[in-house]
Amino acid sequence: MVKSFKGEMEKVPKVDAAPKITVEDYMAKRLITFSPDQSIMDAISILLKNKISGGPVVNDQNELIGIISEGDCLKEIVKGKYDNIPTLTGTVSEHMAADVVSIAPETNVFEVAKMFLNKRLRRFPVVRNGKLVGQISQKDVMQAVTNLKSRTW
Image: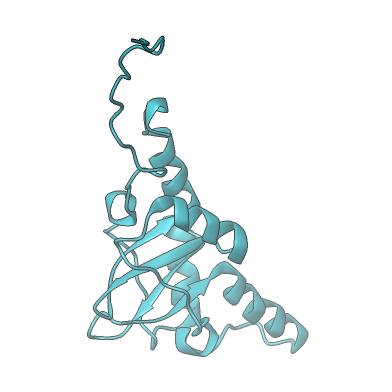
């Protein structure tokens, strides 16, 4: 009779390749939002006062309709200088980006990290059933990853 030299194999628990850490676990939920009919000057003041670089634009039903950013505001500032018009005119809806990439709260943060690299955006609004429920930034994703224990990688 031949005996195996391997001995008994230890049973290793199955571990998924990527931990299931969702956007909902790390997204910001208390957001500064903008209304499409707000003046662009009001939007600039809010961005500066709150030291943020942009934010979601929502309608009265809290549906995401765009994003207003510092870049959008800067375009209006440059236009005013070019036209020699010192006041900034218009509404948020006239200057916001309307073609917005949003994500679901169930999305894995590792997938979002790839999206940040591929799309070169600073933030993603998080939408559930058409309603804005949060926002996740690159910093939020980095925080999620640093909270992982090394054995879960």
